[in-house]
Structures are given as structure tokens and as C-alpha cells.
Length: 534
Image (cartoon, rainbow, N blue to C red; front, side, top):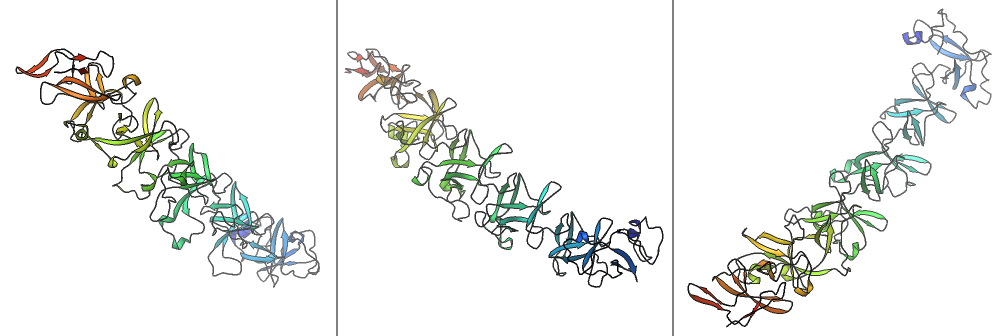
């Protein structure tokens, strides 16, 4: 502002008035046109112009009649300055003029296109807030402003908003409502500088949570889209990853299901802070739902891989005493949960291989879960066969098909691949024993792909896939049920099947008299079974 300079003005003021070459009592005329008379209707501060003079160290603006203006903006070199009730230039204060609020700086110039940190209008005792004054000098109110490429929001009092910001009708206000309620669908988050977050994450409390009452359990991650609006539902490409968000924008972790049109976390949670269901994946409540698993830390949807987890009912408790299970996540991210309406579904009983030295099936294998059967379906993954129950849990180790009575082995607890061919398996004591599981299907000979062989395989005798050996004598007979027939075999202590018509002796003692016996010549499992022993 190029006003006349007195000895009392600051160095800054002197520098801003370099064109004034002489210090005089009367200021130079800075406007060629006269201002409108005070009694005239003033619709714009820009129309206010006058002649400035310094009197007793204070600046005044005079009209052409020599009268000082009051409570009006006067202009000087394209800038506007306000004179108050006493006609004196106002500095570093709020100005209430023509129904709007302005702010003048230390030189008295009206602030335009700029910020000011100050106490609210007419309340010097309140905390300082940030305000923005537009190109016309009016403070921004109930609107958003773009400044240097960033968006800012202001409430009805002109205060810049930070944290949660919600649009309710024509007003922007500090977020206090549930994101799905009374917000016209517009909920934003602004950082501590007031800038709206866009394509960015924030960990904070929900808008309706009072910060003073909040604790860490109330903290959630939110993602703000390019529009600044809170993301809900499914987001397929956030830095190359897929995420799920609840109806109120909280990022979901752990077990997640799409029910109706919404996504929800689906585990039992005694604290009732996160999980919403206590139903298993096979329950009617989740029938037909798309189920996913999202990383417990960063929330991204896992896909096309195996994960070892507590099931969804036990997950929220994270009880170390609970068993974890293997689940398979398909390329889409969906947890594989088989439909037991499929014709290939089987009823199976789980078994434990307890003692390879046992004399009978019941001594070698022990039925689990009191011998109760579970529904199961086989699935090929990357060319290998696995078995899953109705909850999508991989079944491992020994199972017996109730319909056929055949035994299968689906690897160890961390493997699960259906075994074929000759396999060594340890019993509960850690001792290993030989098994054989068919690699092809021949129903006539009672061979089924993956099933433990019953009968002859490569000259050895197997029952439920377990290699049968003579235990007490050099030669012994052993009965195996094959295709509904009880077939008798002569075996030695290596499990090899004998097929000679002779007396089988040990230490000159006849153990088995097969001199008049007939050996089955049929290929396959029954081959070398014997009848007509003396």
C-alpha cells in the first residue's frame, strides 16, 4: 500500500512505499476517482476509492468533500483497506462488512487468496484456527476450496476442518455420524494440514466415536478413493492388491464373506468387536456366500495359495489349543468350500495309524471322532488330488470311504496330497511301515485310484494298503476281503505271497500243507489266493 510515510511507520512500510520520495504530513493521492458518498448504496467494496491522509500518526480515507469515510473499504493501487467506526485504518483484525467476514493484515490490506491462522471472529479467547479468504476477500464458509492442487473444507463458521468431514445438505461439518447415515454419501478425511486425503490410507477411529472415549480396539484402517470419498465394498486394485471394506468403510481382515450386497467379517468373537458370525462355512447362514481370507496385518486379499488357519468359528479367539487347518484360496481369492450336493461327495471316517505291530485292523488303526463320518470331496489342484470337508478344511492322513470300505491316505498334516504307489508311513510311535496305494482304477479287481490295496500287488500282500507280513512263523496264512470274497494267502515274513503246492516248513515242522491246494491264477488283487489247504 503506497500511503504517505511518517517517521513512526515501520521499515516494511517504508519499503512498500518507495515511490513516495518525500515525507510530508499529508499523503499523496493514491486514487484518481472519488468514492461514493457514505449515504449512497454500496454494493461492492471495489467501488470504494478515496484520498488517504495521515493525521496524528493514523491513516484516514477522505471523500471529495473532505469527509472521512467510516466502516467501509477504500482502495489503493488495487488493494482494499478498511476504515472503522472512527475512520481510522484497521490492521490485523477481522472485518464484518456487508454480511460477510474478511481479514486485514498488518498493513491494513484485505487478505485475498490466502490463509490466516487466528482466533475466531469476535472471540479472542478461543483457540486459533485456520481460515481461507477467497479472491473477493470473503472467508470460505460451508464449501470446499482447491488450493495448490489440494482440497480443503470449511464449516459454517469458516473454520478449516481436519479429520473426518461430512457433507450434510449444503453444509460441511466435522464428522460425527455413522458413514452410512445423514451424510448424503459424502464422508472425507483431511489430514492435520486440512488437505483431503485421496488415494490414501488412514488408521483412525470411526467418525461417530468420541476421541476421548476411544481406545486401540476402536482403530480401523480406511481407504480414501481418488474422489476423497471413503471406500466401501470391494476395491480390486489398490497398489495391485484387492481389499474389502465394510458398509462403514473399515478395512476387513481375516475371514470375510459377501452376504447380500455387503462384505462382513465372519468369525466368532466373544468381545463382539469384529466378528459377526459364529456359523461354520457350511452353515445355512453362509450358504452360497463368497468367502475370502484377508491378511491379518495389511488386509490384502490372499489368492491362489494355501493358508493354514483356525477355522472361522475359532479364528476370533486365536486359541493356541485349537487346531489349525489348511484351506485353499482360488485364483479369484474365494476360499474353496465344496458343495456336498455334488455326486462325488463321499462319507469318510478319519483314522489314525497307531501301531504297525498290531495283529488286526483295529489294533493298527484307530477311528477318530468316535467313528463318525464326515462329508468330503476330492479336488485336483495343480495336478494333485486333495480331500476337503464341507467347511473347506483339507483332510489329511488316513480316511476310509464308508461306501466302499477302502482306505486312502492324503499325506501328512502339512501335505494332504493323495498318495499313490509304494509309501513309507510312520505310526504314532514313529516307526515306519510300508503301504501301497493304487495308481489306477480296476473295479473288477477292486483297485481304485488312490485306494489302499487289498490283496496282491507285485507279489506282496496288502490290507487297506498296509503290508501284511508273517509275524510269528516263517510262513503264515492271512485272510483278506476282496470284492465281497474272503481270500486266503500264504505269506512269509517279508510279506511275499507264496504260490507253490507244497508243505511250508520251519525247523522240520510243517506250518502249512498246500500240497493239494489250488492257487488263483486271476490277475490282480486275488492272484495267488489259495483254496484247498490241508
